[in-house]
Length: 191
Ligand code: IMP
Ligand code: MG
Image (cartoon, rainbow, N blue to C red):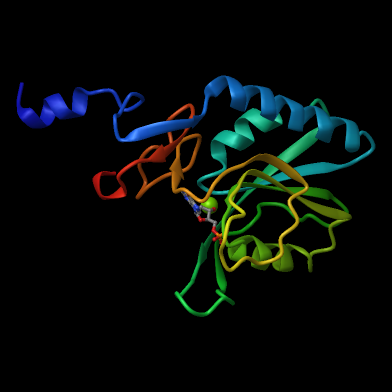
């Protein structure tokens, strides 16, 4: 076996450059709680979960199975333009919703809120489309020192310290989305 193929055969889940911050069990319990809360609060609702690709795909899959209501899902993909000094980064819609949200109870499903710029802009855009209500479910909130847009998270999975994290849908340059837990990358240069 070549050195390269041996490297590729190594386990990703036990990669020594990762420190587990949230285990599969912790995540499962918390997402169940969020699902139960949403189920109770939207008993008379017309719910559509809008997942922001790609990071929220795993959270969406677990959350929707914890919501015992008649509901639908839709997807959006956006790219944000941020530069280091300007905080009013604009958002380009790469993939828009498949169906109108007029009259619907929208819950936007996002992986992580960092500066909040992407979400703030996205919520502005969705706010013009006649939904009956719009709320935000974010799996992670990273509220430590930063230039932060005021984004109200209605359903938050976990508040975490200001580390770069991966797993459960979150990536570093496309990698690690498949980890069933949330981990900190110890040495980002190695990631
Ligand atoms: P912001 O809230 O506009 O700054 O950007 C949030 C987006 O940045 C998220 O949807 C993620 O795609 C990405 N992001 C922010 N922090 C992390 C992290 O710790 N790990 C992986 N992606 C992150
Ligand atoms: Mg994202």
